[in-house]
Image 1 (tube, one colour):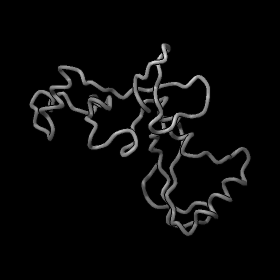
Image 2 (cartoon, one colour):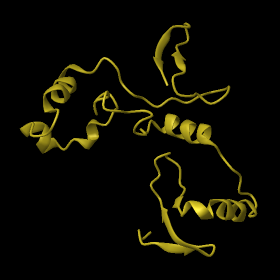
Image 3 (cartoon, helix red, strand yellow):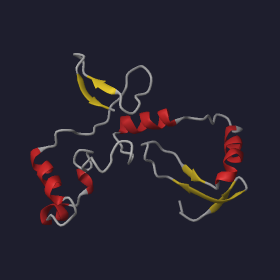
Image 4 (cartoon, helix red, strand yellow):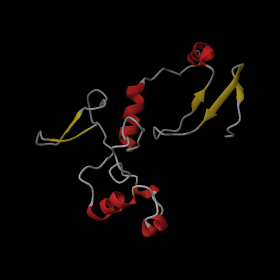
Length: 144
């Protein structure tokens, strides 16, 4: 879809994109804040549209192993720890000509102490930020 601004349900200056950072097939809609209530009311009038909160978004990201900056990754997380090594081009790895190359290339070689992975919850409420991840023996092995 084009990134040009469009009109949506009579609301001008809307941007509709398919970023997909939750791993689901959906849309993100950016509109002027003055039109949010009108858009939500219009969408909810269509069956079977329902509201979903951040817990739903977080579960989708968690299961897909996707990262949201500031929530799942930050300046304190290297791309290797975040399981994003695939984003570092092979030529850059070979040449080492990028910011942070030293520790990142070392982690590629030695494997990091911590690693972001996707998890699937079998039951219970959605995992929230900071929740413990417990193995089958009851030992904490990480945090959401």
